[in-house]
Image (cartoon, rainbow, N blue to C red):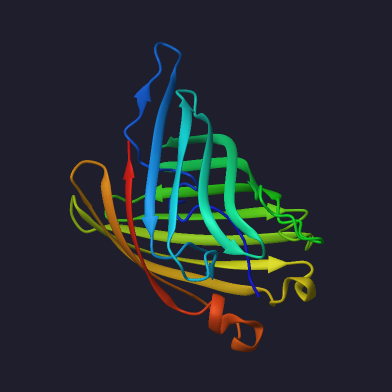
Length: 241
C-alpha cells in the first residue's frame, strides 16, 4: 500500500514550513520573499515513502509579512497510485516571544494529475507548533489535524515532537517522533502508527545544506511496512535563496 501524508520533507523541526531562506524585501510593503529547492534520494513523510524509494526534486516559495503572517507553496514529484505531482499551498502566522516560537496555519495538498476512479487524494490540514530555544538545543511539539484525510479516510490527527542540537556554526543533529491516528484504518491499510527520524546536517557555501536522515515506523511488515514504511537512509542537498 501507499500512504500519503504530506509535505515538506523540508518542513522542519521547529516550524512546519520554515525554510531559513535569506528573504528579499519587496519594497516598503512589509513583505519578504524567499525560495527553496532540494534534491533528495527519497521523499518520505511521516515514515512513508512518497516516491517508491526513488529520488525527488522539490521546491517552493514563501511570502512573509513583518506582522508574522505568511503564505507559500511547495511542490514535489511523487509516485503512488496515478499521482506524479504534489502541490501544497499553505498560510498561517508565526512569531516568537522570549525564545518561545508559535506557528499556526492551514495547508492544502493537491495532486493535479490523479484520474483513476475512486481516487480522491486531495485534502487539507490545520497545524500548530510550539517551540523553545534553550541555546544549546531547540525543542518543539505540534499537531496536524483534518476532518477528511487522504483518500477520504475520515478524521486524522498527527502529534509530533522534535529536538535540534547545533554542534557548531556548520553542523547540527536532530531527532523527531510522531504518532499518526486515522479514523478509517481499514480503508487506509494500516493501524495507527508511530514514525521517527534522526538526522545530521551540514551547511556550506552560503545557504546550501547537506542532510543525512534515518527514518522509520512501527508499521508491521504484513501491512506493507517492509516496502513503503521500512527503515531507510535518505540523502538531501537543499538551498534557500
